Length: 453
Image (cartoon, rainbow, N blue to C red; front, top):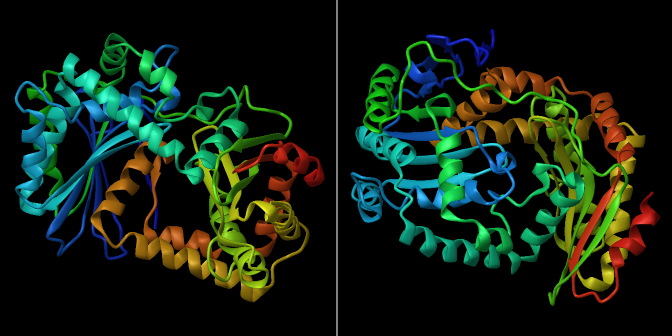
């Protein structure tokens, strides 16, 4: 079955349609005046619907003086428009038993809701009103500044959050992907309302807006509702306008070319450890091999890390591997939480298990178990409308193509033992970064990193 290739940003496609053929119905994509994109996946028999308004702008797009602005906007857009107060926005969804929230990433921001299909028009109207017409009231701005500072403080109190945040900073260095999504206490305390307002007006526009919906949804009806809501928000909708361009892979500059080590002292009962480095870009075809590698190495109770670190040696409760991909870079890491006195042994095992995966072919049974885990997780993860709505957003903003569940399953099942070993070998050849958060007075990470070279 052919993939739905989502037209280049410079091509204002009027409509593309694909029959998914996997029980999920029809996926449709339309480009509205102004370059607004709408993608839907109709799911027959669903009484609920999920909708997301995506803006292709994330924390990496902030200029100096604006750091933290993207996440700040996520909060502020719930604080009122000329036609709705913050209470009225919240009440609209509570009154129908719906869920509404938002998420800021390094490359996009999404405002989303899940409601009964009959309440989708209300959700569309409210969310588009928020995106197009936020007041960014000065008093609300100062109040929310305090809320965000508390959120950052909460994250800083969680050693798991800290180790992952510092790891991304170590891998990407001065590159914008290395910055915390929510900013830092310093940047949030100092950013003026005018800077956030400028960021809002400069980046939130029709060409950047992508609306996705899945479940009990009619594509043509939703397009009409989106168009009406965007026009009501006062955005200029030029006929034939092009959507904003997608990000393209390129050379990642300003990332460390040598391994780094960082110890963060915290009065914790455990040491939290992440070892890893650069990974794959989001659109790399080897992402299917990466998912199988992750399953084998650290993605389940039968994975090598879980069995070696937890089951055989009792060194940790939580241990896993992970990967994240962006348009022009990615990261890959191994995590464990262990007693501070066991950190040397745990770090050695983490490195050894990755190196073994690079040196030896996995046997057929282990490979099939990993493939089965990924396939099952994919299908189960798409059982609800929210997951399918998010998949449409990722296809449009990141990948530039939509593939059905059947096509993805085929690509996962085609992964070979050679693919896994080759990818593991590439990962082990890249500079290694080690971050440890725990109750240490000495720089234990710097002491351990040379041992792993």
